[in-house]
Length: 177
Image 1 (tube, helix red, strand yellow):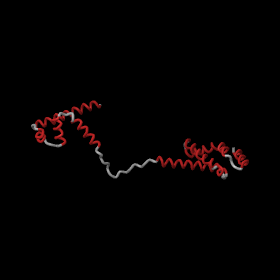
Image 2 (tube, helix red, strand yellow; image 1 turned 180 degrees about the vertical axis):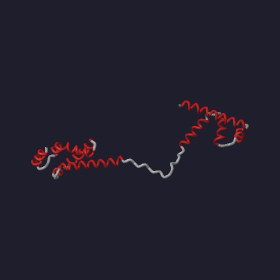
Image 3 (spheres, one colour; image 1 turned 30 degrees about the vertical axis):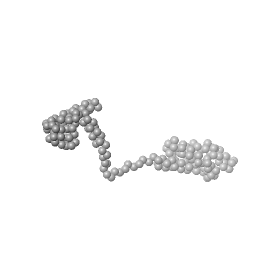
Image 4 (cartoon, one colour; image 1 turned 90 degrees about the vertical axis):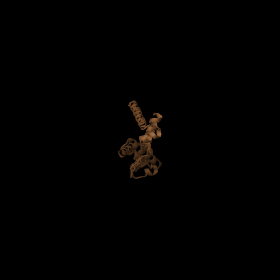
């Protein structure tokens, strides 16, 4: 093997690239595999190194040890790949929060929407009584005055509305289960 390389060098004065690759490609691939630990990465590193060496073969073949020169090129190709990969694939650090997270209000808005949808199923007087009692926080006497009814009737409207809402929610819960 080395005799063939030596005779080719002696005949032409320079080492033939194709002959060198034929003779030493397996050794370079083994070297690259030991370096990278992955067959695919090893093949890529050797391919990059041989591509570069082919373009500069005149200079590479005149080196004291062309194989050592190519091994260094394989190492450099792997380092270049590693740097590109690290730059491209580095995960961003998790941001450090200095203030507690703020509530954006979407959950509260969704809850309020759901309550309004449920209230829309109630009869007008019951809906008005519930809204006045729980949203406006009025007393039963104030609700009775606004609805032009007795205080006991205002209580009855609120009680029946709450019973109806409870019944609707329990039915919906049974349907979801």
